[in-house]
Length: 471
Image (cartoon, rainbow, N blue to C red; front, side, top):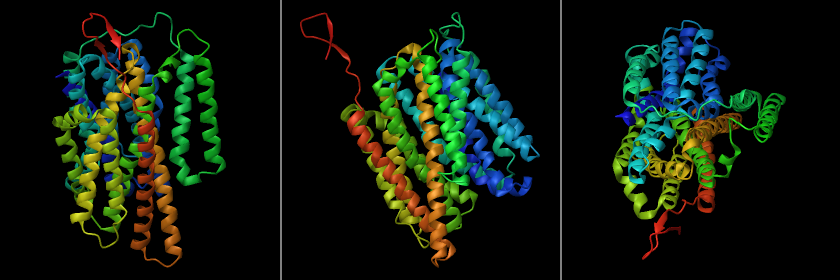
């Protein structure tokens, strides 16, 4: 039941990342946003969410993960209510920033809660399967739910629907989640490190999100990117000089965690490319409304859900986590390749249906073993930090992927328009290029997976001996 509670919270926050996408035109019209300012409805959430993940994950290790989880959920719930009641641009953007802050605090420790509460490998795989269903299906569910709410009620409800769910999570979580004490703050808190890592993450995400507006080689983007790098370097240097670092650098030597996080980042680029560019394609080129756009992604959600019931776990037991990851990534590349064949006259059946279904098959196959590999060698006292690193890899890759794919698609569309293509053909050409680049990113992930992903060997007893040795 504790697993159900944390997965419900994760679902609420993942859905919130994409539910806004289908409501943006209505929000823009209602609150009179300019096109440039409208991006901050999404950007404010992503900046705060991506910036606080590492810090929140480590605080979970120190203060206790249940405490941090409940605090983050409370902040997210109150901020959701503020979003739903917002009647001005500034109020909505500020509330979205607070939502991202609460979401980061809560989700940063969820993986750690699962890893520590399910020490047996077979049980942990099942728990991770439920978690991965929530993460991978939440994006498309957000599109579906957002379309239904926008068309049947109004955009305020995409936020206020979180309030009763958040209250339920708080009540149930307080009763059902085991209260494991943290490492404690007896040696003090690394305040300087906390400030540096948060500032570094915030400037990095800000540079990525605004790069499409200012240009990747502009002084704005290079300046903020350089500032993020300097802050990050200062943070790492500080962590080597103090006794109680907020980010023990030993975590970077955990090959399974870092390798799986990098591969997951490339996979997320393909996933977000499908969610964002795919939804734009069906809306702007094929003319789908908000509700139909959500329905279009339903095969992806259903297949991920079916795989999470145990199919992926059985495949992992037969092929091994590493080969299962590669198989899933290959399927994702196939789905993106299929999307590159879509044009202005493509029907939903069979091309788009098959592409979204195969994408669900690939995501559902690859994400669970990636999570299993990532957390397999992380020490229990570092589980919150490991969880934060995994989530950061997803958020940074998602933000970077959307920014790069969006810029490439926009530039390609402009080129085709200047060469005489009509509006729909130009848009399709831009989205096609985005799908091609996303497929290339996942191919890079496949190469890294083949080279770097290795599960740690378990200890087994030697026949005729009571001594366990490394094999």
